[in-house]
Length: 421
Length: 179
Image 1: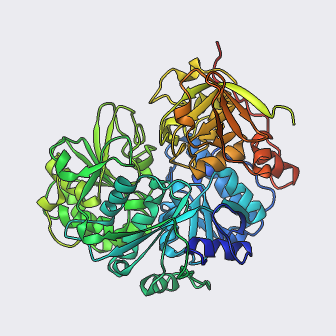
Image 2 (image 1 turned 90 degrees about the horizontal axis):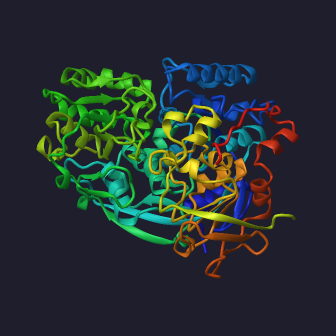
């Protein structure tokens, strides 16, 4: 029996000829991404030796620029760590900062066929690059940095094949919500994506799905490498790599086909992502206080383009706050050049600096008691974005932009029927 | 090894219990003591005052879904002696190993216990017994090296011994107030 992509990458990184579900493997970590959270006094342990400083990336993202004294102190510790070990790939507040997973994409740090770890659950985002990337805990990061290794329990793999293409007004956020709604959690499983529909999906569109892999509790969320992907990586990172393709006789837990053309705009209802979505029409008319577009899942240039297309020449409704947070300063600069930022701020959006921001309820758009938000970000758990009594609906950037204009949850088809991806 | 069979009073929680509930964002950057006080503040306010050191949590599917934050450390700090769930999110499971919280996956356990019943866990044959009903469930065996970390205070003491990280300065870890 052959291996899935995940199994092949883990086998290669652990020096094994074959790995199978149930195995515990110890792998060489190619890239270890440290975020500002890991440097908070409550999480940090002073590292005395590094296995290889070249394999380390440091990005300040959750609270950047520092939002309070605690995060400012964490950034000081992070900068000292960078200086002490001469780490070159450092993304401090400034030109190159952004959400770690977005910076990883901008720079193609997640190399196909390799292993990447970071102490943030949405690290599976790097799976869009055929990379075995996953979120680990802060202790795992310190272990990986000091020993160069990480351990994983190999899970079974669920394969998804995409066919056809998305209808107008629909994005890959809706594709993800469909998968989460119909199939629920994939705890202790890997998910892999491919199929003939893949060529119709941009790298950014794939990243939304890979990032949201954390929300179905997948271990790894790995896409097949195609020419679009390989060209993207080669254009941004000169390092050599070897993508891994699934064996023809790979053993899957199951194989499912997703007809992209059958997906409609969906919204996850407050408090949970799994098995909790409805077609937008079911909740249309629900009054909102805040609308948010951002995060590692929906802070891409494509997401900002979708928002700009819908908001062009229109206004955010009175009494609604639309907050747009680009995923990285690079995305921000591109959005300025493309004119998206002008459109968004003219419409009444507040466009913030690149950071995790409101997604985690840390800063730049925290919700108050009893408020209702519709968000294009990663999760809508109770209390996630602020007060526990706030209600958080989650949808695509198109649905959020449409809702911001109307002041109530609104189907994006009210404003556009064009293809968005 | 002593303590291979442990008993505890059970608190039941449902499916997909997430890390934001166990370690809310507003204390994400706070001290361990602040984090310990806030466990389940949104969904079960006051629970940290009701539970006692040595109690168990019994959860449903996909326990610990969500973020990388060290929610397992908070459960350890308030005195949870064992977490048993139908299934445990793999990122949360890593944090259980690394922060030294005993955690077992045991399919069917959520249906086998009412809150307040006593669970008896054997770490020799990985069984979970409901002492009132006499029912015995089989949990998934935890590999020896991971079990040793769970029971031995997690990964940091190991990294310290190997000279890879600086010794931890004594931090005031205050568990929740007791009755």
